[in-house]
Image 1 (cartoon, rainbow, N blue to C red):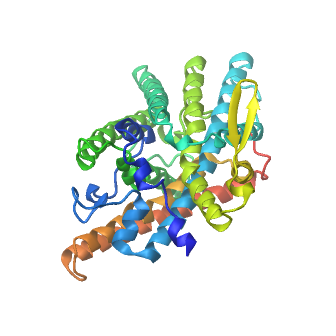
Image 2: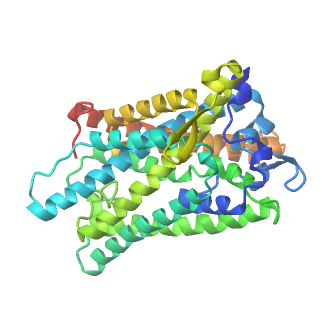
Image 3: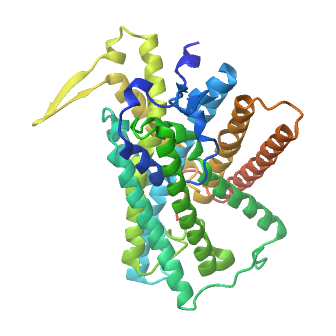
Length: 430
């Protein structure tokens, strides 16, 4: 029963109510994700102005759909967050390796055998994340959202600029509406399409945290109005950036467009600018990893405190002084968070395949979080009768999106299988 009570994303309502609007606005832009898959009125129930506050996405699911759905939602959300940490670790190490490869090619020529293992950089990142995980109240550092937004705009602008420069110079590749079949079998094109669908689906992961962001806004102006404006501006901005990045990247590389145009299989010149973009990616994701795992930390630590309330190992704070610096360390937090980050690092080292992993993350999170639960909440909230045209339309939408998620998952798993068949685990080099 404690798991039912404490599987929840975010902190207590009373503690988050007046955190300030800067965090909410920054998060909308910093996430860099696509559409919101649910209506804003799910934040307050049953009335969007005077109703009961739902602090998190899971609270909204519990209010509208009940306990069982709430637990399923929680398990899916926390699993997805853990895999996001794995995916971010892979991406960060790939950016570090890209910088090394660019410098190697610059010094030794484009044909030089410049291959580097991702493992050392994943380990370095793991150590950094273990240290950062011990910072108390990390989730309250509002400036992180704005910093993430700046980094996101930075590397997106560089990628779009390099693509447009390639096109303007007349070095773009031939393109077609359905993609070129040159060098690809029909089966390869099908699997690649499925992987691409998963990559696109990843852009929708903003939807489940929309309520959490809205809960961090000030009470004046009303949260539902402020959030509607923030969502509108944020989604429009990121949609324009995504479309520019996708279309200009495809026009620059054609059917051989890599999963990330800023990494080793993408642009290589000018070296300093591509390296700068990858530095932006690294800085963005170092903080992003901590942000996405905070809900996991909180739920485990709440459960531990409930189970062992009198244990000094679990609840005690030990003051530590290093020179003039003084801080407290909780032994349970130190051990558990360190073990968690070690597991994340080992999983990333075992499967360091960027494109397929990103597609798998999108496939896992898209249908349940962005489509199924919002559709079911809409039906429950508006009391849409079973068998009506509207009910049938919503269920059809949900079913079609389920097929999309399954196709993306199949493509991602196929891609991971192919990659693992070519490279031994922990031995991958870019």
